[in-house]
Length: 145
Image (cartoon, rainbow, N blue to C red; front, side):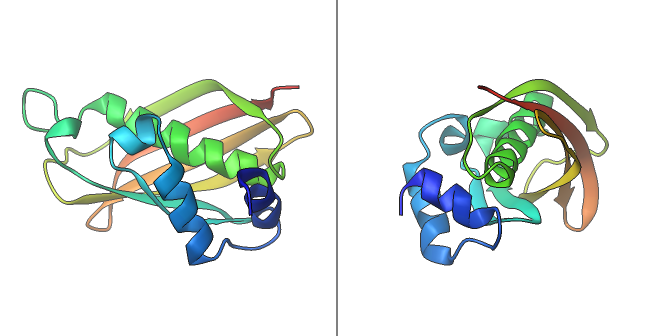
């Protein structure tokens, strides 16, 4: 199954583990560089996790705010691709609020749709650490063609 076929599948049902493994092993961009792992992709959204290490920290030893922005963009973009059945999309606005500091452990992210229009979508991404909300992002996407 190629990537477009996976997204077509994910528009109506959750991807099986072997498809998630294929997505995670094929990642070459920012998500791969930061160690973001997608754990669920389906019609209800996307989940991912990231183990905090030195790549993610600013000089005070806390997760850099830009990391949460990348996590928002990556998780919501994949959710948007699944929602459109693999049609090309682009992010047009990313707003991320930082709510609690994190210095270690695993951050999880969940993207859910707020609005699914014909040309644009709005996604909310909740990022948690140890069950507490640490950042809240919103990504507006638009069909690229």
